[in-house]
Picture (tube, rainbow, N blue to C red):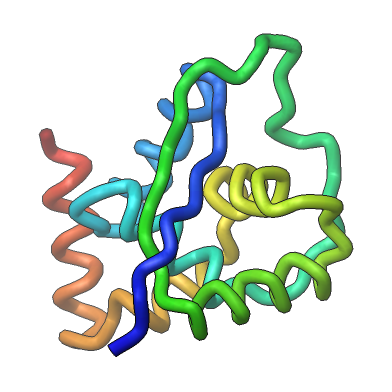
Length: 123
C-alpha cells in the first residue's frame, strides 16, 4: 500500500471562502476532497492573476495523496507552467474546470449530481 503524502498550502480567508463556495456548488461534502479532485483531474491551463490578493496568506489547508497521485499533481503543475505546488493548488481550487468536477461527481448519474448541488444551495 502506498504511503500517504500530506500536501500543505496557504490561502487568505477570502480565498478559503471562495474555495468553500466552489466546493459546495460542485456537490462536494468537504473542500479537501474538492481540492484533491480538481488538482488531479484539471486540464492544463494558463495561470492568470485572477484570484490573487494583497493579503498575506494566513490559513493553511492540507490533504493527503498517494505517491502516484503526487506524481500526477507534479505533472499537472508542470503542464500548466506553474512555478510551485501552492500556486497551482490555490489556482485550481479557485478556478476549477467544471468538466473535471462533473466527470468525477456524476458517478451516480447527472441527475443525482444536480440534486446534490441544488440541495447544497438551499442551506
